[in-house]
Amino acid sequence: MSLASKTLFVTGASRGIGLAIALRAARDGANIAIAAKTVRPDPRLPGTIFTAAEDIEKAGGKALPLACDIRDEQSVEKAVAETVAKFGGIDILVNNASAISLAGTLATPMKRYDLMHQINARGTFMVSQKCIPHLERAANPHVLNLSPPLDFDVKWFANHAAYTLAKYGMSVFAWAMAEEFKGRIAFNCLWPRTGIATAAIQNVLGGEEGMKRCRKPEIMADAAHAILCRPAATCTGNFFIDDEVLAAEGITDLDRYAVSPGTPLMPDFFVPADGARTVVGRT
Image 1 (cartoon, rainbow, N blue to C red):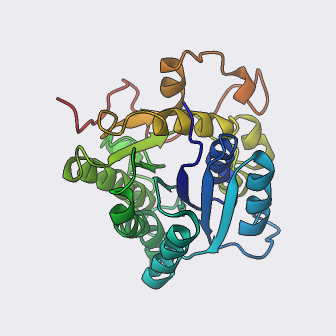
Image 2: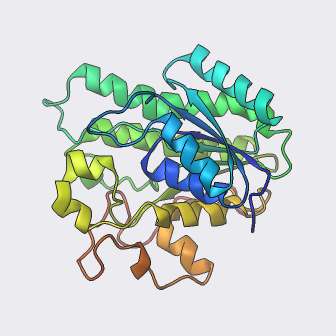
């Protein structure tokens, strides 16, 4: 159960869940390529690729900060090439970068629509495509998309169809690639049962009061770590929920992950009420 000496390419790793996953791997002594856009501090968005690199190094890992726009093919190719040159390969890809706008059809400008689909769906496809040749040379290669189970209940689409389709695009690509690369590379998705205390909650979904009803990003980091340590040959095509992953690892007391222990938690979008999952790659 260690990612020591593994090289992770993590999109959107300058803050939030992406950074938490990187820090958890760094504690094992992993190498982390921080592929993100933020190079200068933003008052609404904590952290840059450089502050993330400092935190990763302090945690025990090796960091490579990469100014990377996953909408741009040349930017992605350059970041992947620099990662391979620095660390000798890529063992794990975490497609974490995402854009959100919870607006209805008439309130969604096409510029915002394009941004979500370019980052979430197209960006995930492109970064995966560029990393796959290197992953195929790794000993236990994993791709983990931070995207939801494919529950096609119309309630998840009715109020923000553009965002939902962009996030589901990430999941469809993992679902398809798990079959395409079966036996060679593991492709899985991970999603939280509750809200996670990130900038999206702070700025879009509820401010400080909303943050109190969330769990910390560390729950996703610990769940991701457990998945990425599993054998790629047998752990693929799954739509994981964070607390279910931890329960399988014997971790059922989740109070330590709560931002405000005892406060009722905010349920996340897209989690089927009956626990059903779309699953591929199993027989």
